[in-house]
Image 1 (tube, rainbow, N blue to C red):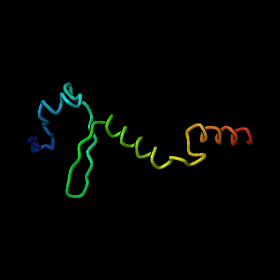
Image 2 (cartoon, rainbow, N blue to C red):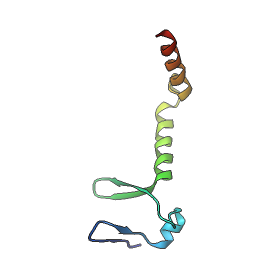
Image 3 (cartoon, helix red, strand yellow):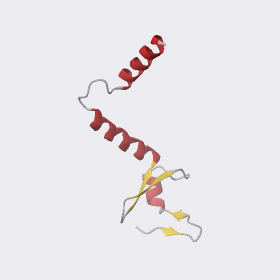
Image 4 (tube, rainbow, N blue to C red):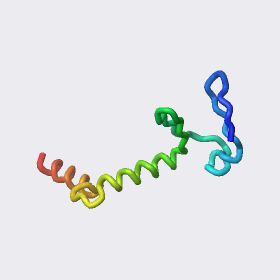
Length: 80
């Protein structure tokens, strides 16, 4: 598919893509410069990708959960 970049930097995405990715009424996207490629992601896609990466990074590590972090903060606050 083709998209047009206007002189002022606006990008017009084909309606099929906007429908498929829930951008029919507009919305924000994340633009990633990947060297020789430009990647466009919806905010939901970017969040899901970040969550998947985080899960891989902390998988099997003790003390890496949100609950562990909050428990540490609570212990620190109690110690003050």
